[in-house]
Amino acid sequence: MDEVDQVVTRLDDGSQIRSEKLLCCLGRVANLAGLDLEKAGLAATERGLIAVDADCRTAVPNLYAAGDVIGPPSLASSSAEQGRRAVCHMFGVTLGHAAT
Ligand SMILES: Cc1cc2nc3c(=O)[nH]c(=O)nc-3n(C[C@H](O)[C@H](O)[C@H](O)COP(=O)(O)OP(=O)(O)OC[C@H]3O[C@@H](n4cnc5c(N)ncnc54)[C@H](O)[C@@H]3O)c2cc1C
Figure 1 (spheres, protein in one colour):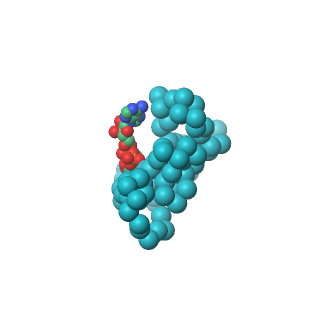
Figure 2 (cartoon, helix red, strand yellow):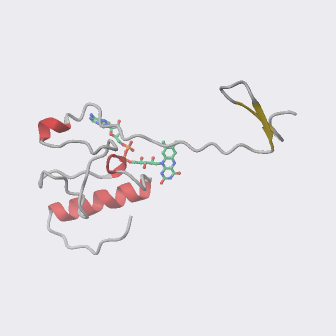
């Protein structure tokens, strides 16, 4: 057992599982710390995210949010698209809405 060709997973209860591979899946949490949402009149959702509409506008109409702080899919490409959508809305540029 060289822990490359095979894996030993040691669990908290002391037991061990020997397997060929281990798939580890982790979630991520949006970092809202320091944003002082309440001072802007906003509150995080119960999942710790900022709620937005299809134009990435928050509950305060002149405030927008995009990227990981609004939740899945939480990818670089979707975050960029959300930012583009938000800025287009700010400046009155009409867009079709791609699913994210
Ligand atoms: C390990 C890992 C691997 C990933 N791999 C991929 C991948 O392969 N492909 C993919 O598409 N996506 C991937 N992602 C996801 C991708 O990185 C994020 O979805 C994307 O970076 C989100 O962009 P963002 O602008 O919302 O946040 P970020 O890129 O995190 O940018 C937020 C910025 O805000 C700054 N900031 C935070 N708080 C404050 C504050 N109070 N004041 C001022 N600035 C502040 C931070 O320092 C940071 O620079 C991965 C993420 C992780 C963690």
